[in-house]
Image (cartoon, rainbow, N blue to C red):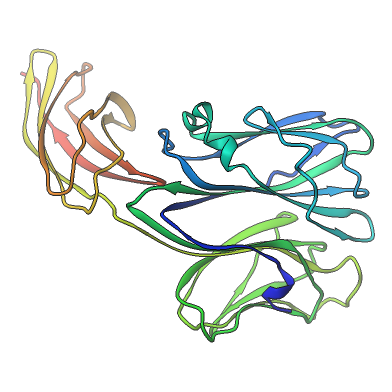
Length: 349
């Protein structure tokens, strides 16, 4: 089997930064189980950044392909549009794959103010079903980022002894790859062959995610070991192959403590900070920690452009008995977060 057996949904280069959040939800709805559930999916550091793309990808297991439900994304009903693109029938159940473009929903003012997405699913009647997985694929829009994305989605079936060729090793450039796969039997042994390296994939849940780097012109294939006799129920399902390269003009902050002193019960810290990176961070936060607990937090209101040097003064009341702490500087750019720790030592008079 080859990639042609897993449909290509998208092959495009975007101006922005990629973020993927995968949930192995395993939520049962209907019957004696819950009738409604809300599953949050992360969108870190959103800060009103528009999305160039947002795709919601779901797998649902049911006794048949008749799923009576209501699906909302951040309160917007998408049930009518949410029809299965692919189905696979096993001896005991049906697996359905749903793919929906939620870009417009997540670019409303209310959605852009959140660092998460709420997917609400309600059982409306009939037989129950299980939400097996949710995957949100998103591109944060920015001139400082570039992402080349190949997104494949479906329900490709592999039985013992069969291979699925993810890359033939001929023309593929270096890329990061994420796959989502599931097993109809815990006895099966799926192995991922990345060039000369062989990785035995875990089967802790029905569906799992695995991420790896693929070198230029490196062949990659997924194989099901022949240790188990073939049967209808004993097979691997490959649900996603997502290949991407992503570059970001990142900020990089270096800092030093110019002075640390006590003024009465206040600790006063003078700090010099320089951005040696290629872009300004979206946000900078200063936190003073003592034994892992934050005793001070503030957010910088000034944009720190590349090569810019800023001086900051932090004043904080120090609890009794504290004579050392850590100044943590946290900065963010699109989906990425970095931090720098500077130790502080002082004695009260």
